[in-house]
Image (tube, rainbow, N blue to C red; front, side, top):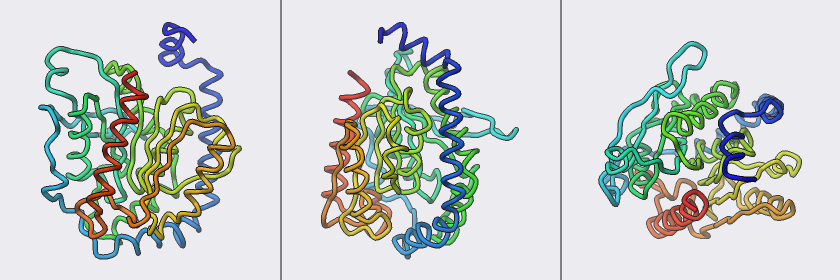
Length: 302
């Protein structure tokens, strides 16, 4: 497909692609509704156990400065159910001054919400040469206790339609308002699951997906429409996202001939990349970060 045709496809969104996205979105919504009990009694319970005793307080490691000066701001990128949605946007200072168009990244928060840790990571990603929009799927709420985070998690998973629209609008914002040349997604924990879901919502449009220890899908019928490369980072000790699930996901992608790279750190646990949690693994987090940037550079900057 020519560059012109790609641009037309992305910006005009032909009705066929729109109908497909709507159908897929409804399928995902039905899946979430059918799995509500499992989410409440299984996945969210496991997440609660994994995060027991954690406090999402930004640390010196979490606030590692970006590799180049960046500028950041709160932006309204959508209106959902007549309510404004505000996110956190970061980009290199040089691009802000020159108006240069950069690849965009949708960053999706952990189950704690859009807190200082996620904003710091968004700035670090921006420092690597990206326009980054850290979205808010919790309508402005931020949790500091596992029980509170669990309630917010369950609320979104039980009624996924607003989150789906939120992410579609985030994509539009980066493409139309920030003139992103390509757009990828990244998420951690709750956000890791939604990074994959963003790919499923925008299977033809999104250019790259990165998943950090988020719940997965192994049904090949669901994964088949995905056209973008996928990278995943998981802990071998993670009881919330078992290694068996990761391997089933990887096997399905391979069977479908999808471009993917899945990394399992045998001695790392859930949330190994979150330096504010007790399960932080510096070696695994550093390696995953380097691989993440290399992955985005390859698939978004090329």
